[in-house]
Image (cartoon, rainbow, N blue to C red):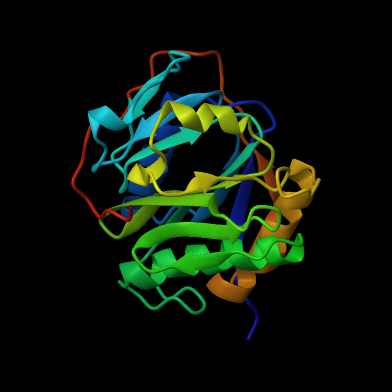
Length: 246
């Protein structure tokens, strides 16, 4: 049986969070209402913090006064910025996708974790899941400490997913000090660069594409470019109590 292709988009320029939010929201509605193409959108944001539906104000310090946004996704505070690869996934969860059964939110989140772990393995990093801690974790071989290398936060509207995963390629890890990442104080944050693994965004993107079909069953299309027009006042998020992942 021939696997169907899944639309893959990429933004070469830095994308503002309000634009990304509005675009994801619009596409998720069109997937449900008009049968628009499901997709993965790879991009990078400027430095900013987003608040999930469980975010606590006391977990935001923000000494650099970066912009903050209510994301409406599950989870708590997350940092996004240069050197971090964002993969926003807009998928109709009423359908079977590879190993992910229909209408199974937990399986979908675990699928995202397994996708990231397989990708990291190809790049020489051993990612792992932890009970009670959504995301992907690695143990620093130099310190023996467990640190987070990828965050996962999803929102599901009428069984269409949006938001997704962020993988730390080579961000300024000091920027994570402006929050309590995902509300977890006991563990730090790391990156492929900190682990001594030097890769470009293009190499990470290829590893993500290679491992997609293992989990989600479809073949990535050729990249479709997506760029933001002149900055404008896009509508942004408000707190929501849809599905939360942490």
